[in-house]
Structures are given as C-alpha cells and as structure tokens.
Image (cartoon, rainbow, N blue to C red; front, side, top):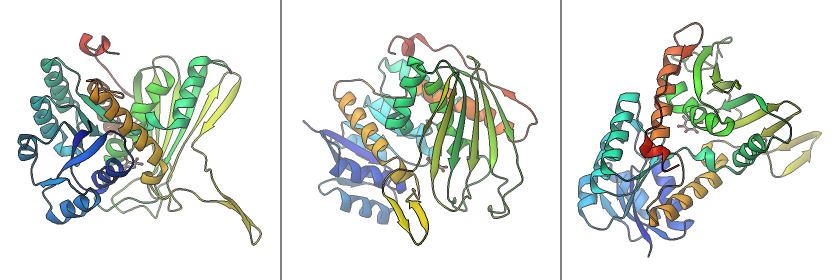
Length: 338
Ligand code: ISE
C-alpha cells in the first residue's frame, strides 16, 4: 500500500517535494497539500492529481487520509507542526532546520521521547548525496590515512531580500553543522567567524562572505567559506585533506564544451538541481523506513545538536575568537536506536 503523505507548506521546497512524490518516489502518494495561501495550494495540487487541499494541519490530520507528513514550511512554524504530528503518532520528514533555536528543538526532542517512538527524520539531504557518502567511506576506511582538515565552500548566486545576517548561519551553514560531524566522525567543540573584505555587491544589510572555522573533538579543523552573492551559480564543494592525500567532492560534472577558444562545463543555479538526486534518495529512504516504523536519516537529536551549533555560530558572528559549543550526552532513547 502506498504511504499517504501530507506535504505541509507549498513554497519552493514544498512544491518541489509534491512533484517529487507524485512522479519519482515509489510506494508513496501525495494525499494532501496543507497550505494557507490559496494560489500556492492550487499550484501544488496541480502537480499531484487526486490530492486533497487543506488550509491547516489540524484538519488534514483529522481527515483520516494521512499516514505520514512532510513538513516544508518556513522554520519558524516547524515546532508547532512537529508537536501536532507527534501527537497524532505519524512519521514525519521535517525540512531543515528542526527548529530555529535550541530550546524549541529540545522541546521537540522531549515530546518525541515521551511518545516512546522515533518518528522524526530531519531533511539534511547532503547525507544522501552520493559524493558525500563516498567521502565518508574514505574517512572511515583511511586509504590515505587520517582526516586532518576539511575546506568547505558553500556559495549561492544570490539570496532574496528577506535573507538577513543570522541566516548565513541558521539557513546556510546549518547544512555544514549537520554534515561535517557526520562526515568527519567527531563532535563540534567551537565555532569562529572571520570576515574578509566585504563584497561590495552584497545586499546592503549583509556583511559577507564569511569564513567559519569549526573545531572538532577529534582534532579535525574545518573552514567553511559561506558566500551568498557570488553571482555565477550555486556551488557546494569540499576538499578533504588526509595524512597522505586529498579528496574532493562537488566539482562541476557533465557536458564539457569547447567553443570559441573557451572550455566550459555547466554549473548549477541553485540547490534544487545541485541536490536533486540527494532529495530523491532522501525522500525514498524516508518513505521506505516510515512503512516499517523507522527513520533513515538524521534524527531529532541530530537536529537539536545542529541548533546548538547554530546558536554558537550566531554568537560568533558578533564575537572575536572561537565560541565554545557544549552538547549534552545523547539520550539513551536515541543511542539505543542508532
Ligand atoms: C537554503 O535554505 C538552503 O538550504 C541551501 O542549501 C543553501 O545553500 C542556502 O544558502 C539556503 O538559503
């Protein structure tokens, strides 16, 4: 039987997921689109014939047509939606971030633990990118020795007017706070932000690019260039430095073109294409796991840890030198479930 999914939020990501579930994912259908904005809701419903439209989540959950929920609203609405879905006892894939601050993330973790079942998977899709997966295997198998450093580059062509300074951390570097410990097998112990010369073409209210330095408890040092006005395209690359070699992921791939004295390879414009396959694999893994009552990716506790790192990162935007990150022990509830 198909898993009947309600997609909550029909903005850029929500609509993308509706189309994905309707066309690409096996074993699931879009049963409901929950979106207060009528025009957006209608546009998403066009992508999923047969789905029902709802203006609010309560009505959708009460309708009896929903087996699982994909939350793709803006981050400030995640806590409320997650608590409702947990109360209904349904599996949920929540777009990043889990919530926007450590306190609300912890409330979600507590509510999940109180229910006695792990229902939440957080949508940190980079863990489903094939190259990230491969690099993680290289880190574990050590063919070139131990991992020493990661140089990460996270570049966006541009960002909307609504993108404010703290979003450099909470919206963008949030991905590195999840994927770096997963990749490097350590825990973040401090975050520092350094400012190079400001890009004169950045929106007036932003001071960027920034360089984020992360220290891990296993000694691995990580630098992340976060850049949101680079114009040429969307680029997420990592160079891993080992004791006896280096590895790179995220380089442009595909058609190479020689023309008029130039050599070129097309690059991505935004994350929807750069990570399309990762999103597909993430949602498929979530659907398959939800059907057997488990999750297949980052947990709510992972989401909480990222929220703690982001809070330190936001402080680091205004602080000279490293800001310590203190994470609690993983509760037995999560440790036992892996
Ligand atoms: C956006 O929300 C994302 O998740 C993208 O992956 C990231 O590159 C971008 O900076 C964010 O605004």
